[in-house]
Amino acid sequence: MFELAWPWVWLLLPLPWLLRWVLPVSESGDAALKVGFLAELETLAGRRAAIALPAWRQQLPYLFIWCLLLLAAARPQWLGEPLPLPTNGRDLLLAVDVSGSMDYPDMQWQGDEVSRLELVKHLLGDFIAGRSGDRVGLILFGSKAYLQAPLTFDRQTVRTWLDEAAVGIAGSNTAIGDAIGLAVKRLRERPANSRVLVLITDGANNGGEVEPLIAARLAAAAGVKVHTIGIGAEADDRLLNRFSFNPGGDLDETTLRAIAYETGGEYFRARTNEELEAIGAALDELEPAAQEPAQARVATALYAWPLAAALLFSWLLVARSVLPLSLRQLGARSKRS
Image (cartoon, rainbow, N blue to C red):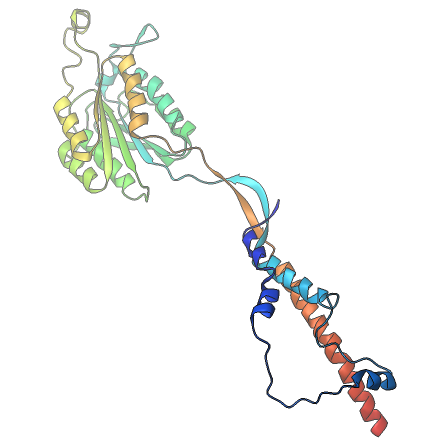
C-alpha cells in the first residue's frame, strides 16, 4: 500500500509564488539600455527576444520539478504486509517441589483423589499456556534443584516437561533455598523488565546448601520477585486415619511468607483444587501476561525516485538553455574562420 509519511509537506506548494509576491524585485546595479523600438528590431532580425517574465505555460516545467521535490520531501513509501512485533514480556520461572511428600494423594481433581504433584500439573499447565508473550522456564527441586526447562517462548515444551516430572526425580528432601538460588542465577542474566519466580512446595527446607531467607535476599537484590505457594490439604479425621500422621504438618508457612515479603511477592495457601485455581487467577492479576503481539508493516522508502526525476528534469532545462547558446557561438566561430 502506497502512502505519504509527511503529507503536510504539500502545504508548501504555493511557497515560490508567495516569495515572488512578498519579496522585492532584485536590482543588479548595472546600467541598462532601454530601447523603445525593440519590437521593430526583432522583426528586422527575424526573431523574437526572450520574454522577461515567462508565461504560465513556460512555468510548467518548473512547477513540475517543484512538485517532484515536494513529493520526495513528503516521504513516499510502500507498506508491506502486516508482520507481528516481538513482545517484551516477563521472564517467569516455575519452581516445583518434586520431593517424596508431593506423592501424598490428599487432593481432589474432578471427584478423584490425586497426588499433590498431579494437581499441580493439571492447574499449573493451564497457567503456563496462558503466559503468551512471556519467557517461561521450569525448575524441579528435591534434595537438589535442577533447571528442567530454560527460559523460552515455547510454552508447550515447558508444559510437556512439567507433565513428565516424577516424584523423587530430584531426591526425597526439599531444598527451597537452592531452588531460589538457581532461579536468581538464571533470571539476573536476562534484561527483562520483570523477573518472577513462582515457587510451589508442600514442606520445609531440609536440604541443599543455601538457606531460604538468604536466597530470598539475593533474589531481592537481583530484582527477582518470588511468589510462594504452600500446597497440601488440611488435616482431618479422614486423612489422619489414612496416613496415621498429619501430611500437611511439614509445611513451613512462616518461611514461605518471609520469602514472599522479602522479595515483594505474595504467599498463597492451596488446600484444595479450588484454592489452587484461584491462586492461578490471582497470579494472572499480579503478573499479567504480555499483550498479544502488535503488528507493523515494513515500509520501503520511495523518495529517491521523485528526487532523481527532479534532478533529471533540471538537467534537461539547463541543457535546453545552454546548448542553443553554445551552438550559436560555435557557428559564429566557424563563420569567422
